[in-house]
Length: 126
Image (tube, rainbow, N blue to C red; front, top):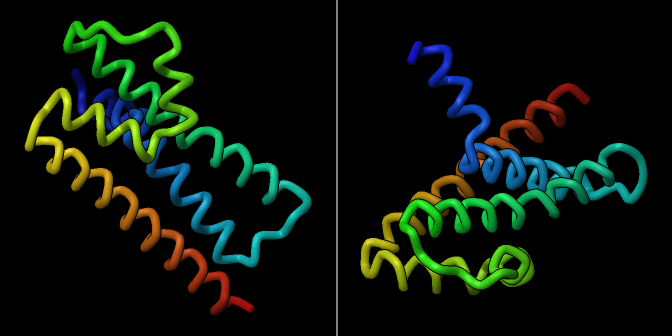
């Protein structure tokens, strides 16, 4: 696979989608959360896509590991991902789940830093 193909696959991966959603939510929060217009619509979209991305990631992981999951597992994870994702990780990986949670924390912190830089640039231009 060419370098461009790998870059495109990384750009559209589930961790990338999680990063984009976190960054969009953080940017929206840092700018005073306007309640109308495109900004509010994109914030709502990001708030729906974040748990969707996490649920899809867990479903793909369960399929890769050939684990049986209940029919509505994706919906259940969508509704309660902050609790269920760590439970799933510790049940499938044991102590190695801390590494995956660490990567998620890095994604979260990276999105917060990205949003902070974007807010700083916008504030400097005004």
